Amino acid sequence: MEKDKNGCQREQIKILVLGGTGFIGGAITRYLLGRGGDVLAVSSKDCDLLDEAQTQSYFSSLQEDYVVVFTSGVVRQKDGGRHILYKNINMVKNFCEAVDPTRIKSVIYLSTCDVYGRPPEIITEQTLPHPTNYYGIGKLTGEYLLEAAMTNVPVTILRLPGIYGGNNRQNTIAVLLDQLRQKGHVRVYGDGSDRRDYVYVEDVCRVVETFIGTPYKGVVNVATGQSLTINEIIHILGRLLNQPPEIEYVHREQAGPQDLVFDNRLLTSLMPKDFSFTPLEEGAKIYIYIEAE
Image (tube, rainbow, N blue to C red; front, side):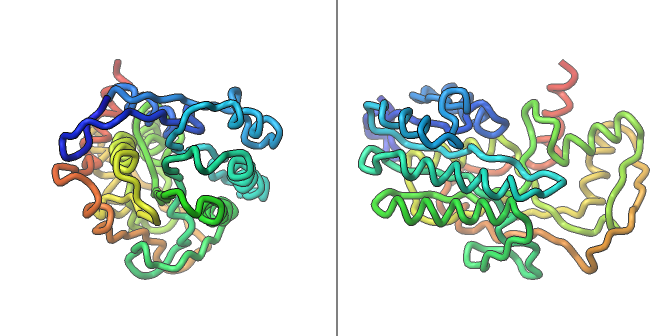
């Protein structure tokens, strides 16, 4: 049994983490298990969401009611191929067609801030989507599919910016740390003035835990609300490594600023009062500590 935010006992419910062995899904699984959750990490080996028949068979075999944390997906890639679009849409489509909505308590869908493109204004949940790559288009379509299929189920759509932490080495913070450590310099496209908002992966876990306990129907941007320029981020990492960075600026085709700046007041209003995001400097320290072990 677990307690709600008022301290009352409530029955513990099964949590399915789709994509539960990936970077973010694995972190969520480990975090919730550590908090005593009844969690089942579902990988593509257990249920390949791209296989319609296998998805139907898997979900028809479930005997309990459950919460779904949907982290499955093909991540954004440099080639930006259309296969990303098709696969991310088909995963959600097959899921929606396979499940019995009456067995689902709520769905938490991990989407992306790529659905916004690069709007010139501060981003809120009311900012109109304008995706400019196949990854963003696929994730936005997944949002619409879930909302249409789960009309009587709370669907919480979490739009994430860049996430870092854990053992993942493919995110921007890890790549910059590796470049600084190995070469002493980094390459930056543009002049480094673009602003970004990076979120530590365990903060995402705490956000997900909150919405499991208190479902919310709608879109929530998961961002610290404290965007930093690329130059500022590089200098923070350089200080942590005690290595003044040498920055090589490379011309890019896109003109003008490519900022991502968020108003996160909706998120903070829904989180516990004692919740706060991990500052980048602290999160990067943990990264460096993990590598040193």
